[in-house]
Length: 329
Image (tube, rainbow, N blue to C red):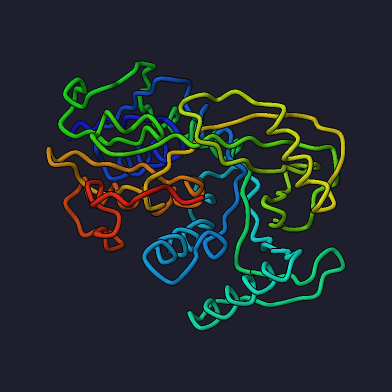
């Protein structure tokens, strides 16, 4: 079977490699350079518990993908900065402290590890030891190298309709640009980030409306949430917001870099995973969790392409499910 993967971000690259490993003939098309959009801009947080507001399909999907991560990146035989460093959530107000306590309670009830701690910077802190991070840029570079090593062709071309794609099967993994290609609702959500010349924290830190992530010997600060269409420009307002987050979390320092990416958002915050009415595969709408969900998404794409049972129930993620009222914040 000839499969064309539309999109060369982390989801497209990971899916292409999984399909090739299954013995299918795979090629990739993308409007930009591979991995140069949301994947390149991503912070690389691997936070299945941090990104879930309650037990349910999203939590289960994130946990399953995180469980796959160590073995998945080990196959690349390259250091991609993968680390199970945990995440620390800081509460600065009574309302935030109550929210962290509620988060701890339901996660413990779900059998997950979550511990309330004291922290001199905040009223209370919640420690989630079973989370981590990865250097998204190094990971994407490693996936690109593996694609080249396997002889998977990557063509730079813009696809706007599936009937223009040559191949027996198409996999739409074009991120924020997937909507018109697959006939699904995906909205670009701009996120600006900073890299500051401050020694990195020992773990990922959430608080003050943002987060800190270790990145080499420096600290990454994120992120804004802006609905500005396909405008990827960085702004003074965004920089000021991020500098305020860094200062509140104890990471104020010289700004080394400032960039933005466009996350693929969906109305209910869940990714779009499954088949279109024409039989092609959709794997998009991962919003802030494309890096985290790459391993499980690739496994889902492989199962669908081979006619096997996917590793998770895809009904909650059906590409053409009824729309929700608005995107989550």
